Image (cartoon, rainbow, N blue to C red; front, side, top):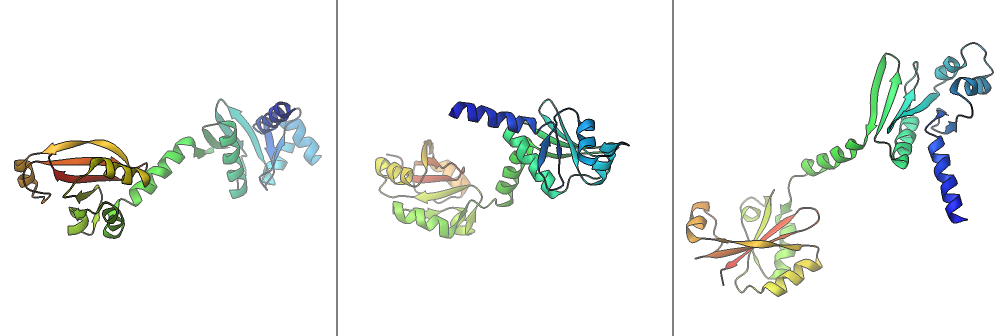
Length: 224
């Protein structure tokens, strides 16, 4: 019974892809054809489709995975546009287009979601501040080094220095707050000198951690 209801619901949603859309955003699935249904809705014999267009109705059709709103008089309003996008997401369409005859436009595409995430990430490029770094440093009993100290912020890694490094304990603490161990690298005294970074004397090892937001932590300690 549940499967049948689910199937019927999916069919109802799919039918909206071939429909008339009210100015309030609601969809009316077409029973025969857009023209015949337009006549039933308006009672107008002479070009009933134009009559609905002038009232702000959208003729909704689809081509492949593209949902199309067709009105050669009035483009979709905000309520219609959002309802079309919601429908496209629900039915797995990857684009919503407006067909205005001579004026066409893409109202939404699946790539918009990726672009939005990209813009959010790059509009907030500062990954670490001194305040956010202090919370991690205190848990690890570490010293904050690098640009978070010199510039009060970092767009890249949070660099920490631990004098008496315990790998198992450090991994556990960082795992508990969402950071996974990503491996390590060794840095020679000459490389440290050239970089002008004061992470220690002699050979150093940097332990790398990262969370699901791509925030990175490098913990420096004497190579054991």
